[in-house]
Length: 447
Image 1: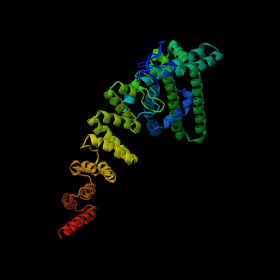
Image 2: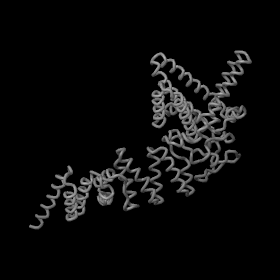
Image 3: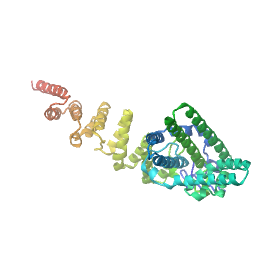
């Protein structure tokens, strides 16, 4: 388990105490992050997650559409701003230990809009420096200047993203401090970034000779966005890897609840639960689920916490949504388990959506939970009057009434209601057949 500086005081000669169990821990165990080169495959796969992939494809399509228009340049500038802002979000997210991108949302692009323009100014400063060298010094000095600029530029980007301050990004002392702190890892990072840039140039040459010009620009934009996201994710992880040592340089990792370990499990949640801060734990999990709605590990943990503290309001909101997603994912046994745990705490617990309620009721009947199925289907016609599956759902209710509880009269009333209310429904013949069966059984008993 890794702790941030708010949990553990790393600037001390004494062994600190674990905030979870209270035992003394050795200082070397505080910083046990894997070097970025051991996780290189994750960086190359990062742009293939749905959120960044969707954004890249959308921007490429927009660029292709407007490339021949009069306003194409303005739209392309907007594309630059949007993508640069998202690259900043990627680096910030990875620097907080999140190796999976969050869901795209408006706040990603509406906050800190000045960052792309600050990046342009940083690039301008480096270009101005090299231009001055070219005009006033020899060519060999220019070569040295270009190499030095390429070596320092990643540090400037990392400082700009972490501090959001332009002057810090071009401050030689701040740049030197970051490089000194990261040490050999920065040199290795520089080599990897150089290899990625070489790969980008090779892709440019290959696409240039392989595609017509009207397709080349869009294809090159697609490839460039991919490589840039890989680079930014890599630089973000270096910030994350050395966040304890970077405590004096506006480190991104500022809150324990933001740090996630290599397996995606939230470290700080155990601390919050140990301290009895259940409301904060629930709030943090809800925020994470909003960013990663398909992370079922987070949803299961939230459900377990809500059950343990008997938070009925949030069970009705988040656990109900969890059940629906389990149904859609084809996990009926898990859906039944979660539903029954909610039903035992909330007798009137129901799902949103008539179709989901009917499907869940069928699963409950098949698993022997017929009473819970009745509760789930109760008042379905009032809650969803336009649902075309009501006759099928109430046919199931009639079967439960008769076959599981021997309430023949109630079952007959339901069937007669269906015959009257839905005369043209496809299930009418099945309803009539079951009603005739009940009538025959009643006649036999009368004889």
